Length: 91
Image 1 (cartoon, rainbow, N blue to C red):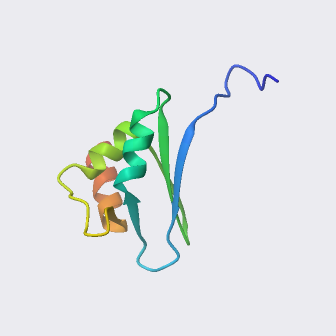
Image 2: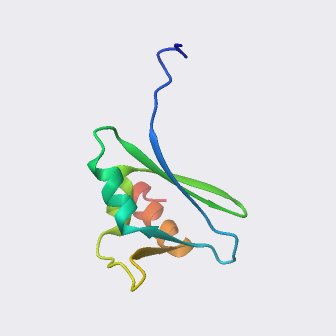
């Protein structure tokens, strides 16, 4: 079945935060699994007020300088996301 030229399959890693202020724990193992896939992937961070969608390149740029916590997750806060978009798009 074809959905047209503008539709493609993607690998999507989705995390949801239900607390305020929002934060997400991205599993290092899952990120490595996605990185090993031949297809690009995206990471969707959901929270009570909306969502952020990152390409695989953007998510690794966002994680630069971060180390996984003791539980193996990279912790991303809403302020990390705001700083990233401010730097990335100069807004």
